[in-house]
Image 1 (tube, helix red, strand yellow):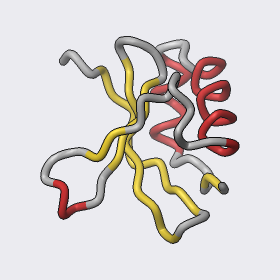
Image 2 (cartoon, helix red, strand yellow):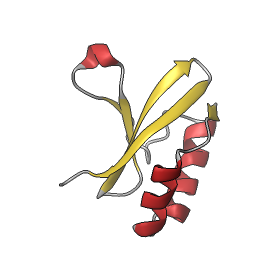
Image 3 (cartoon, one colour):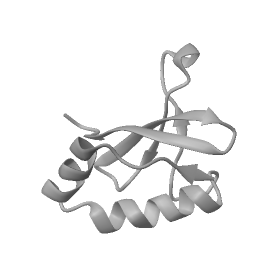
Image 4 (cartoon, rainbow, N blue to C red):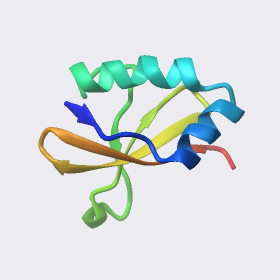
Length: 82
């Protein structure tokens, strides 16, 4: 699995919230096994948009899409509870 380079705004968000190491760890899981239980990947509503998320930790999640079966683009990192 390949993850496209992050947008500058996402990199800044990760840095601001001190999530860089956690994000890298979860990204390695995503690249090797998208079904890894620590990721908790889910298809978001509305399902026809084909947006997915995985958890960085209990508070933060990453929203992403598949460009094809082997390429992922990260669209957003957000606080799940705000």
